[in-house]
Image (tube, rainbow, N blue to C red):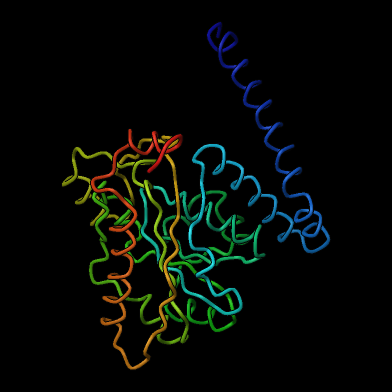
Length: 281
């Protein structure tokens, strides 16, 4: 109890003070956007406020930025395909930027286990997060919305490493969705994503066996390192709709690997990622 009183309470006060400062900065930078949102439904206002919070966190903690946002066709539905980090924190920042800069809500596909998590239902409802069947995803795109899918999903999140290899297995549902909805695919990748959060390297076979049996991500995650994060958006891919899903999958994987090869030093380094906050060639 003396330790709690002596150390924990002052830390909580400090957190509250910095949260206060953050909210003030948010309203200073985004007051026009927030004022517009409050005139509409509560979900739109809530999304804008949460987006401002995540945008502030990304800027302060990771110096987050997007390169190539002009590659995104803003006047038509788009399917985003991205590399899945141990925690997809870049997706949160990316979604926040799209809401604040272009008033675009990106629907996202999440693993089914998340929908069993207490408190997640309201998050999924407001932020348009879905389990993602092929038909559901196709309908969302045909209705004129934007959608983000990581073909690697939880498997890539849990068992990827600092070499940034795509772990898609035989998954090609996203290709079927794109062909059915007749939309462009835009790949994006975030530099140093695996250096922000990592899964433990020990016990890989054990975690892999547990995952294959339960489909639940039990492998421990560590990190929270304030490395520099930059999301690189690739050129949109216009599909020839005579292609097979296998061919679409290979084309998109090639484009995403090209982004990784061009922008990510391999293997990734936490130290280098930290140094890039202050200096980068």
